[in-house]
Amino acid sequence: MQTSPSPRSAAPPGATSATPTDLDALARRLGVRVGVAALEPGLLGLYDARAHRIWLAEGLTPVERRCVLAHELGHARHRHRSGTPANERVADAFAARLLVDPAALEAASRWSHDPAEIADELDLTEDVVRAYLTLVAAGR
Image 1 (spheres, rainbow, N blue to C red):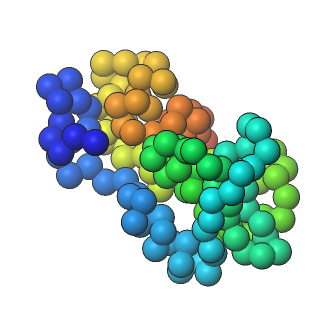
Image 2 (cartoon, rainbow, N blue to C red):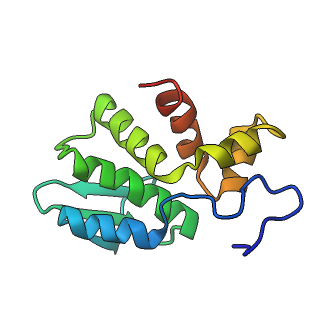
Image 3 (cartoon, helix red, strand yellow):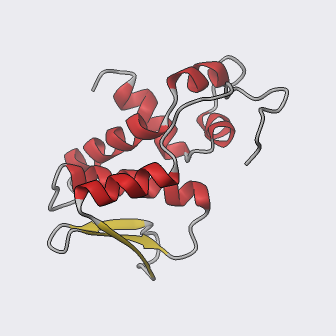
């Protein structure tokens, strides 16, 4: 990660967004243990409500790890016991609120309307950017 914005960077200096350290601290406050495991193909993370534990897939990139952890913390925070579509939307919105800096998103949106480009610029996954645009910014 760069220490200062590149010339076309949308992220203003001092932009705020939950860091990996912030997410680890939130997990501790929620009493959730976080581990890494070989999960079934296509599964990047899961929250085990019975054990109050989050499992992250082996081999995630730092960006994926941060975004998946934020999503799974949403499940833990809301004590979800299943992955219903409604619960997934709640966890998506929780992660988006934690990770998206609205000022940085607004700046990136000035030069691109492509969620993949914006995600790359903000060190997020495209899923988190889309969740912010569809759930958080829409007031859901």
